[in-house]
Image 1 (cartoon, rainbow, N blue to C red):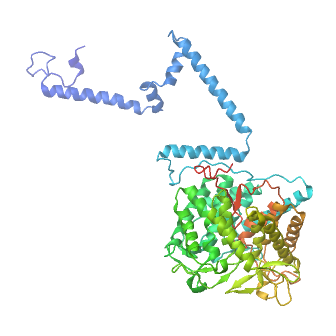
Image 2 (tube, rainbow, N blue to C red):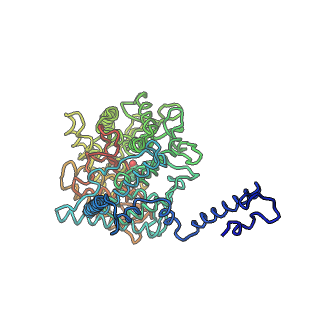
Length: 622
Ligand code: DMJ
């Protein structure tokens, strides 16, 4: 058949042409156009066939799988195919064996270890794919997580201790379940009126109880509750608030709580949130001296001090209780600024003269001068001393400056503030411009535990003496409980006007579920194993159950000397963070959160010791 009959626009009879196959230029062009349109049509049609990707890979990209399949067929006549077949089969066998081994390995792990492995793998992938010199998408450096020892414990062998420990866990469950039921997302619970309670210490940040309780839930192995709390943190914990917060409270409860939750569980969300919040607190240090403001608006970054604090001063226990958390923030974020800020506070303090070697509670952040000369190891001063000692311990005993400041301060406290009552009770008084006020706060009772914790590092001739001091303070604080009607301690007790370890003023008779006395029992138990500390702790459990427990949680009490409790209707977040945690540890073995690996922040949030020889792996403590 002539080609001309197939082509509609070929030579026509009236055209002058030398032969049927010779075309004019325009005709040639049209022919080319039609031909290429036809080819394009055929080619394009392939893309509209079903499952086109598979077809394309089969047609255009001969994948190794396709080749393998065709070559291993029964008719394969290629002489090299037998060898290939064997190699492929061997590889498949090997892969299967490897997968089986991995599965077996995984089955032997605890669920939380499996979860952690998955998280670690994810993290590695995130870092690899980010390819930004080790930076993750959230700009945090990659940190290989290793869980420090003793994050969870085991049942004590002694049945009585085991039962007591179980009881404390049940108390935690009641406190947590009630909060969850009546006040979920609020900062705290009102257990009598069964509703949320908000304190202005946290501005409009929410969920103080959730963040404060995270590590207690973890160490008590209440993992279901821990997961629910984690999910709340992931979805709801928000620091983008236009509100003024207490830098100290937010640091010890939120930053401390998040850091502990990270170190215990390895969950990245806690590291991310802790660093995010830490960054929001940094503007508080914008003062002429670098001594931070007490209050900070998290949105504007504008700070100020409590209006009642001597001449616009910052408070010792507030600016002096950032050190542990900020050192860890630098380690976990790679940002040295956090550490620099708190080390500068030390510098300012070391330049100042100290009256009788004591640290006044008030310091003006503009002038760098002391305010009123009021010294206390209780409210306004307490955790500053605690953090000097713990900074040294947490630094793997390398922070010699912190160590010296602590033991020097303790010596000045012993000389100027520590006294014995006429009936032999040791107490720590308060100092006002050289005069002693013979009053000891419930808050001051933490000092028994602190002195015991530091006794081992004291100059050798002082170790025994400091252990005795610690035991004496524990005894005095126990007396302050024993001498009340409800067997729970008052906010402050006095040693004057013929009384010893008793509150005499109505506004000092309340008990708000504070932990300090139990904290000291826990340290004393760990260091002495004297059973009386567990007995005293158990007395406190019974009193809490009898007088503070209500249907909707646990409540503080307005007057511990009254025969029946008048509830204040607040379940403080530190009841879950500290009081119940210290009670649980009091009835646990010493290898649960062991002291040579963990240091507790002032809100009882455990932070790992930063090993001096593992600077590149900040959270590895073994
Ligand atoms: C806690 O928030 C901390 O222990 C802080 O250091 C002082 N007191 C309360 C609990 O009493």
